[in-house]
Amino acid sequence: MCRLGIYLVCNYPDREGFLRAVELCNRYGVDFLEIGLPFSDPTADGDVIEKASMEVLKRYRMADFLDSTKQARRIFNGRLYIMTYANIVFSYGIDRFAGDFGFIDGLILADVPYRESNRFKKPLSKKGIGFVYFATPESRQEELERLKRDANDFIYFVSIRGTTGGEFRLDDETKRKIEFLKGAKHKVILGFGIRNKQDIENACRYADGVVIGTAAVEAMRGDFETFLLSLRG
Image 1 (cartoon, rainbow, N blue to C red):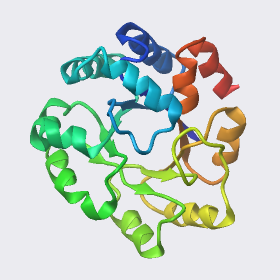
Image 2: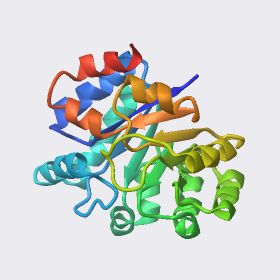
Image 3: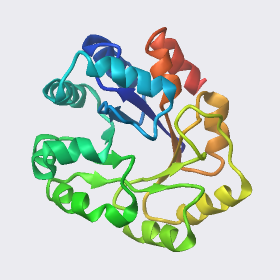
Image 4: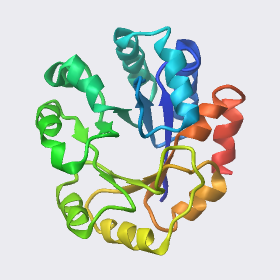
């Protein structure tokens, strides 16, 4: 069964709208949520998510994001992940972050490769928080073998070269890399460029699930409920 994940920028377009979106995701059976903690230099994010993050940072602080994420945890029954950048966790303090966010299932740091992950993984694991590894079309075979061996939650496969919001596509080499990772004990989830039901169907011919980011953030400005229903058909 193909798993569906939705990415939401924390407190975008505002706290009430964000929590309503979380409730809708729970009502319509979204399998997991990624909550983006806004960062001023989001190198992996395209224009839509970057703009949303900048808007939110003008009105909310880290304490607000923590409070809203706790509320999201109370609302949403599926697995809950935080996606952000290393500087956010460094400046907050890794141990403090692990303690305060101990209610989440996993952490995704968009700018932390496998070789630099241990400094985060160890303190997080003490609190039961998984560290999600990235694979990309550029990942070499030896790196894929390490990911397959060491993954402690799902493997996030970035489907396209570039930032979020591009057009979804998979070349033959990328398909072979996904197929190799699928033998792991954990799921392989495709992200970047997936916007609609057709993309989901195409992606799930190769992966165990998808996460939708840019299209979900765009939908937050319109009819988010209709958007969610369109994904399941």
